[in-house]
Amino acid sequence: MRRYNPIWLPLLALLLLAAWPRLAAAQRVLLRADPATDTIPGRYGPNRAFYQHLYLGYTAVVGAADGPGVPLRYPQSGELFAGLRNKWRITGATAAGLDARFAYLRYHLRQNSAKQVPTAQPHYRESLSLTQLQLEPFVRLSFGRRGNVVGHYLDVSGWGSWALSSNHSYEDRPGQGQGTRTLVREVRPAYLSRWNWGLGTRLGAGRYALVGRYRLADAFNSSAPAIYPELPRWLLGIEVGVF
Image (cartoon, rainbow, N blue to C red; front, top):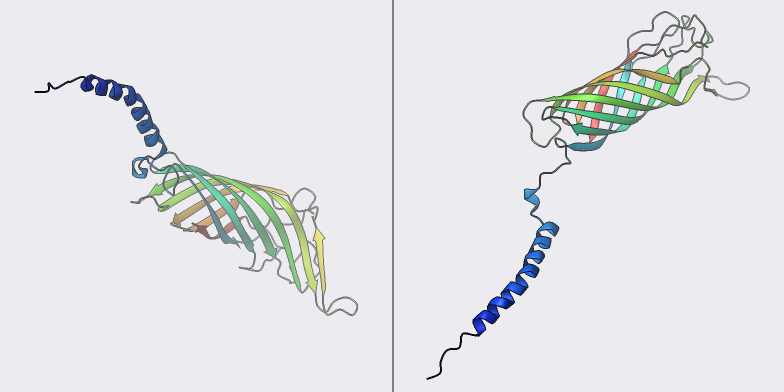
């Protein structure tokens, strides 16, 4: 009867010991390369560490000028804007952010005997406009129950703007000479301030928000005639997030 030779057992054990480090290393690389997605908490999203989205809106000029001489047409006078919002979460209910936007602000001047800005000369249509780049840092307080969504929030902000261009435009009908109308645009009037700044607030729910901004800087600079009253400082309107 053949005796059972157990020599292959030590050989098998040696082979397993030699191969084990390679198998373990391969397993570790696999885990690093392809982890289960549901085990990693996401850092990007509406209610996560960082979020970024586009937005657009319109705010109307509200209120009267500080004195007579610059009657406005409402609600045509206002600001159309579009921008990019960056938001960083601080705690579960608070966040900080920075908006960068392009804004077109236009004051439509009503033509009547009280008009003094920029001159008393009446026209068929007349306006003052500024095309601006704006930055607006803000602090956000969120409230109510929500998941990974924007939810309900209140923003408090400060903003500053620089005018890429400013214009005084008017139209006369009938026009000069043989024309049916004459269009004139005066570029960069000396009396309009190129730098502006102020405070703002937003009350939002999801992609929609009510917006209010107050201008602290003067619309007219030291080059403006003393009779020019300050333009209305309030803008109120609506904003829509694109996400």
